[in-house]
Length: 172
Ligand code: SAM
Image 1: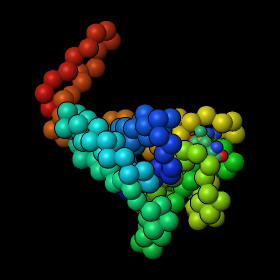
Image 2: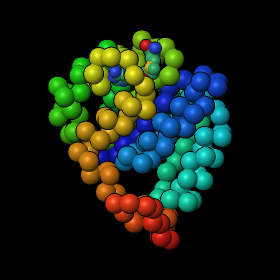
Image 3: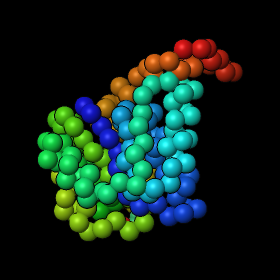
């Protein structure tokens, strides 16, 4: 399954770290890239640095028009899943979503425009309590891929040698 994450909104200061963590989570848990409505280029730079060190390919596109990207994605046959506490609870809908070949996962920051709820093929809650876009994305991506994403290798980067105690890293 081809997965891309679209991060809607970005409040300066509050969201600087949150948006970076959305992108880090997307990269680490199976997405091929992240689309940011924010034009803050520093996030892309951070992720490039991480990919240089830990391997793999990952893209960050900043300053995108979310409507344009959603339309393009759907016109190309992709499906759209919007994570929102108001949606259908994850356990009750995840099996439907697993059949998608190309999936765009949308997470918000501040108030999400009502239009997003209409354009999405699925509006999915990770429980019906407010938490965060990073938590929602992580749980969703892991349930969607049933943990397979945790075993993925990232070409060309440092490799962690798992240890019960202590840390061990070797060149890729
Ligand atoms: N107040 C904003 C609104 O109502 O549109 C949402 C703010 S929330 C901190 C930011 C994002 O976290 C949401 O847009 C959603 O993507 C995600 N999120 C938070 N809690 C969630 C939940 N229980 N289920 C799914 N997504 C959630």
